[in-house]
Amino acid sequence: MSQTQTLISGGTLIDGTGAEPFSADVLIKGNRIVAVGPDARASCEPGIPLSEIDATGCRVMPGMIDSHCHISFDQPNSNDELFFHRRYGLAALVAGVNAQKVLRAGFTGFFDADCVFDVGVDLRDAIEGGVIEGPRMTTGGNVLINCIGGTAARLLPDEGTRGYARIVHTPDEIVREIHKQIKMGVDWIKVHVSGLPIRPGKETGEISTWTLDELKLVCDTAHQFGIPVVGHCRNATSTRDAALAGFDMILHATYMDDEALKAVVDRKVPLVPTFTFQANLADFGAAIGSDENLREVFRAEITESVSTLRAAFDAGVPFLTGSESGFSLTPYGDWHYRELQVFVEDLGMTPLQAINSATEQGARALKREGELGCIKPDYLADILVFDGEPEKTITQLGEPERFRHIIKDGRVVDTSTPLPSDWQLPGWRVGEYSERILTKALVTSMGLTSK
Image 1 (cartoon, rainbow, N blue to C red):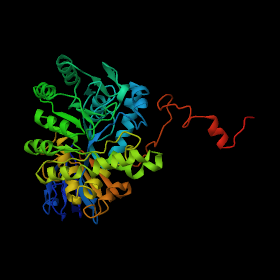
Image 2: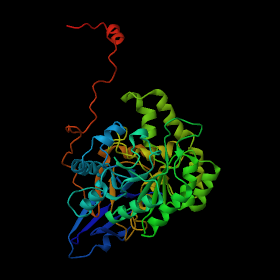
Image 3: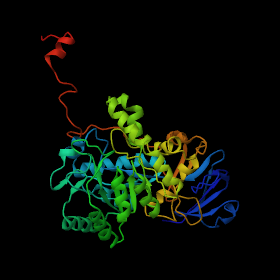
Image 4: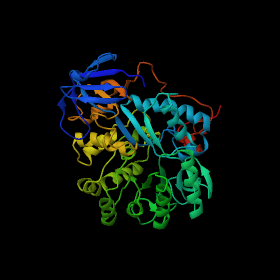
């Protein structure tokens, strides 16, 4: 990057550490922060071009990080659509536009937990290489899963790949797939440790579908090459075993019991609860025709898990914010902020603690701890100039008109060109004959007659 200087002056700083806001100028040189505070202006180097951003009346804060996203899915309404209506090249092109929506929502980084095809790796490399604009990102590949697990029931084959899932059963298959993904260039290995049973049982939440020895094998194999492991865990056993096996991050961690909580706390495994999907379905499901009973089930996942999650947070377990954007309930650009709201309203965090989860703690998902997510000297210059007081009203972060400037890697993002809000692609969405069954009784009840 050519050397330039940018001085952000007159703003109130939220530095991402959880500290109270304070007045400070920020000097950026190239893609790094070089000075913060009253000496920032004096640190400007003569002979290097200088631009100044007047942040008077605004908050200056780190770019936020969504630590659980699915950038290649493009908002499907069902697993049927996701598994059978996506194409490789088109998925990559669409993901490139959706990534820009994430960036314009104030999220200058995200973790793409798993993807269809190899879209995550290719998109990450295109962004890093300057081919397309987008947030910083790390990515998994196809999630490791067995045909019992997941949330797709009988749509999963007994072997092979479908959608975002790679089916593995034996130790040899597990090791071979991890080697393949690492060779391809993934940043994380993801495992679907729990999944929905075909027939509901007595266990709360999902069911665990991996043994502890299998999970240890995943960790041993990935860690040999310096690649971290993340798990989808939505019951007590899966969360406990993931922590015991050495997982580097756990998504959801809902329905923990005392044993699971102890395993997480003892090892300080970072958690990404990802309640946005559930909260949206519970609060707004009626707007899209969701079943009322289903809405209650998803609300219960939050209410029945907050006490153990809060206990983990109080014990020093790192918490990261993730929206699970990529589904019809969590479209890109709209709801990334909502996890912060849930952290405040349901987990009882302060707004500054929630912002810390979305900034300094989120750097863990991007493998950039100590150089991203805070406004400090020598940190990467991902910065928001925000017209509001999110330390008082966290939901302001969901109002895009408040973002006066979005800076990523030391450069102001151009948000002036509108992005397409939707598209009509042949065969991309599920084609339905109808929303209802055309019974004779229905026709009679509506008073319809044939012509």
